Length: 203
Image 1 (cartoon, rainbow, N blue to C red):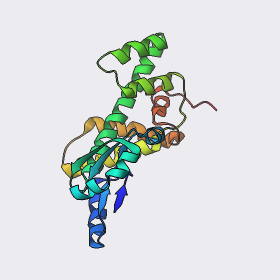
Image 2: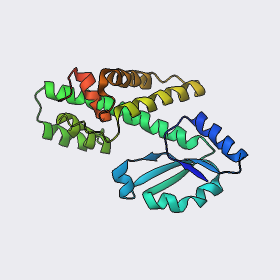
Image 3: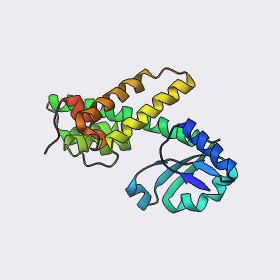
């Protein structure tokens, strides 16, 4: 069995699953939500596409690193929900960057801003982790900007496959693309703030 936790296009996942089946190998597209810290703490969320019986066989692996493993359906569905997840994350990151720009330009207290927004309707784990990094200009990579841009590009390919317009995601991807081209790709994805604010990273 192959359990693939990389972020790929659904079309690629289906192609690999078909090639694996031809060789008598089961293949699961099983990308995750979370990074190194979540893996070490057994807090990953696995989004899994592929054969249901293979999914059950892989449970010991999922339980070793994750708090949740959800079977999404046939091959490619794990990759699909992962791209949707990262599209939402990238879009929220772009919105948080603009919120930080507005708060700083208005002279708001940073701590008070974060506290109030975290308790409002837009409060989320992403806001609580991304906003402080932007305020502090801490772009130590947890998830590199260039990887987010790649995932948003894959989401655009999915949108083409589904024949659905995704104007917001397209705009956000263009912002990440510009940031990558501006040599911000190896920084954390929240370094999109620098692109939006027209700032240079600290040396």
